[in-house]
Image: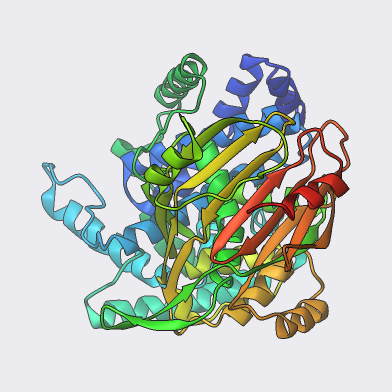
Length: 187
Length: 331
């Protein structure tokens, strides 16, 4: 079971094999959650969105009968889209003060510094295009160039140049944010 | 390491701050258990539970939001006149004519896939759910409930059932980035959607409708034209051009059609190529559209608009020619 390809597992899922779906779940959950956590910055919301991603995969398998040749790219693309939808919902609802990390801690100062750093990074990413921010998050999670290309929907050969532009844009935005001192993060 | 690599490395080190801490790490076993619970509940309930009740909608809902994009924009460009309301200038549309457009199966599948992948044109909030059909004793009783007197087919068959469906209402808050992503993914120019569309609120109100079933299987449904309010700075012709492209019309052709249509009075009627054909006909002196399905087990239908009312007739056991002939007797 473990050695089967994603496509084969999805096809088996379409035929009602729950174990195949569980294998897919375990294979991709960490990365799906990781993308969502980095986007929305809150554990509960990231977990809820991850559930939604896998519910969609489950429905997708039943409808398409496992015909996809890159299940991972599909999952991470859906995760990114749902993450951005959530951010835009948040912006629309003007929930600008969502805590990014739990406040109870023995190490309050370190927590505070980490929270501020996250806010600055998220604020800088918010200044980038969705594709640029997406590429930086994916690469930070050690997705390969080929994987990034499949998820974002660009030619693999262009990932390096796009990433370099994204990095430059990020640095400029980050420096502006930290100089301004009042980061306006992804929301 | 060259400068480019250095920039990338530095950026990725910064972005690493967003990685979950140990107490925020993924918990796949718990997540899978929760997933199983949800899918088991869905099997029992015969539907899909909402994992995020306020922000994530059911499959049906998500699909309908995708379609809402098509419908909302189609409806957006469907009506005439601009008027002042509550101190703001709002566009008010009312259906006057229908413009059918053939949509390929591939294009529809692509739009469905985009919706499934989470691309949404905005947040659609239903403020009043449309009601189920409620049988009443007569057209007169239906008129009391719905607030308008229905026209009937006076000389054709026996009226065996009259029903009323209460209307519904809702609004779409446009998310420009999502809407542009859909337009772009559909192969159209996303910049056809202007910046001013972001956050725009489009209100849709669908009125009560009255249905009448005759013993020859014909169903006549009628309803006052729906109301659609949208910001006055929205140019319906640009939205129309974008919609035509989303539905698969070539850019040049979409531009030409968009320029030739009076978007302030025309409602696009997408017809899936695989389902059937359409043609325009004359009904009581106005233009209507007959939809003829390829599947002979399905019934043909006719839609037209007259005097502020939208009519839809299903053929029952009639031929298409008989359907059109009967529609001309509606009084």
